[in-house]
Length: 210
Image (tube, rainbow, N blue to C red; front, side, top):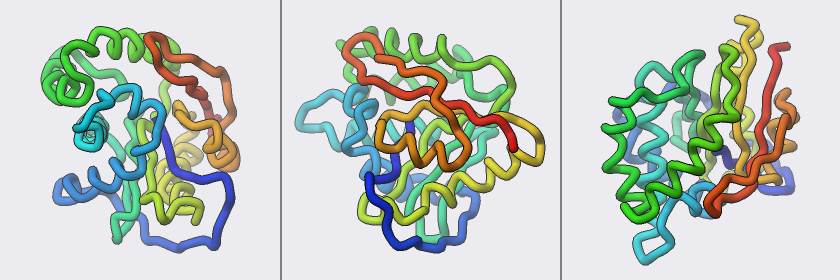
């Protein structure tokens, strides 16, 4: 579930990347909601009604909460975007965590759509590698700043750690136009998956350490 770059590249923007703090949560979730406003997975997950924008905000807040405890979350000093990583062995939620997130999922998808959404998510989870790896759950940049290299900078701290620790990385790209960005950072497409129950096509990508 990653989104960041438009098709064309622009003049690079240098940014100081740092870890996300709890105080960043509200503002950063708003940035990520704007970044994912046109994202196929976010719009499949979120009910398409008059509350769609708020539902996508709730969807991105769930992404924050999934990775905030024990994860690796990075942003810039100006909160221009974020990369939400799950550390090795931490990507899969337990039953208690799923129950705690259920109200937010309902606010995003509505009760009627939860069974279909869960079926689609289970199909994605079945494809998830079991080998220890860092998992990039979400990468997003403020729409007006996309294409300036901020996504690469946001990924850099964990990808450098992957190379140092000799640990792979994994992501699911929800936009085909973003695949070249991840390929430039060492990822390779391993499979294309059409998410069941009306979901979009996603690109499963794996990166071996350099």
